[in-house]
Amino acid sequence: MERVITEAGALAPGVSLHPGEEERYRERTPRSRELLEKARGLIPTGHAGGMWYQLPYPVLLERGKGTQVWDVDGNEYADMRIGDWVMVHGHGDPHVRDAIVEQLDKAGQFGCPEWDLAYRLGSLIQERMPSVERIRFQVSGTETNLLALRLARAYTGRTKLAKATGSYHGIADILIAGTPSIRYVETTLPAGVTEGVAQDVVEYPFNDPDGTEEVLTREADDLAAVIVEPVMGAAGMIPATQDFVDRLRAVTERLGIVLIFDEVVTFPMAYGGAQAHFGIRPDLTTMSKAIGGGLPAAALGGSAEIMDLLEPTRHGGKAPITAASTFGGNVTAMAAGIACVEQLTPEVHQQIGALGERLRAGIDEIGRRHGIPLHATGAGHLTGLHWADERVVDHRTRMESDDEKVTNIVMALMNEGWFTFSFGYLLINRAFDEEKIDAFHEALERALHAVELV
Image: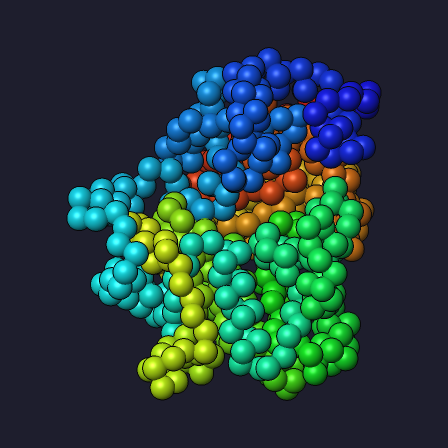
């Protein structure tokens, strides 16, 4: 493949883009590039804050409906980013929209005690997740993971956090220190993170029960919490094995370490989230993304014993921990969340899961038929596309995947009308159907030919 130096050289060193498909991409999206450059004069990356990684440059969207989105150049795509892993019912879901409009006619935000909407959404989540004996609402996954860690520290009297090598739990210093989830970040001490913070991070090997038990046992005296993504999201859509999560739960219980399930991404994968899928009862659970129905919402739930550290009446009128969040429990987000979660019935979860299995099986079949190391990982609505001789099951095998080939496949898929990340992460929602999944497989075939990989 001819080497072409573009924005990709800055965003992903060493990545060469297929010249024909890159030219086609640029011809289709000139307005996106023009507006991106205009915005960069004010906003770093040109994006307000969402996931922007897309080569040779991001496409800018302006509307969406169901499975489809349209960019500023008028191109239509099937959306396989679903609002940064959020829009589980598709864009413009009428039930969510009506709930938002109805609430806005009453009030958009109070920022003071409001019991009805938060109580209803909390009850819906609790019914699905018995581990959630108490719940508190925040705004983002990062904020919620930080609160979970603070609770764990207060509860155990210890300081350190253990997380899987290459996992991602948000942008706060303590969460981002350690092995990065993507190849193009090469330091375990990101700029601006102090060594004092980083020394409180311990890493364990995902999907390696023996190796993880060894790390946790060695560090137990200092470990307040172990945090885990049941399906590693940003690190490649890699599901945990049952043996791994079973051992993780057993070891943390034995050592008195708080087990935090980061279900920011995995909440929609089953009725009751990934913890129901695996049959695990974590001590704390963090949630965000889909639970807000498209509006900013997050939640921390867990055992009454730990969560009651937030409750003043349990501690003589002064709670050990205060969790103030101006927009935590925002009434409009709670209304949207109720409308979203109420629709996530067991049948809907089963439907989305079956479509995900169909998506992954079709990708694997294409790889086998062409004799190429293309395969898929994931669970439920989450799928990762990989080009690796060894099947991807953890961070080490994920780093063996050929990111250049995946990036070029995705660029060609964008040209075919499929909107996704350059990482090759594919997300679906309930608005997809078998016909749409089959159409993706046909587009993938064309993309592989377009970039000359078959």
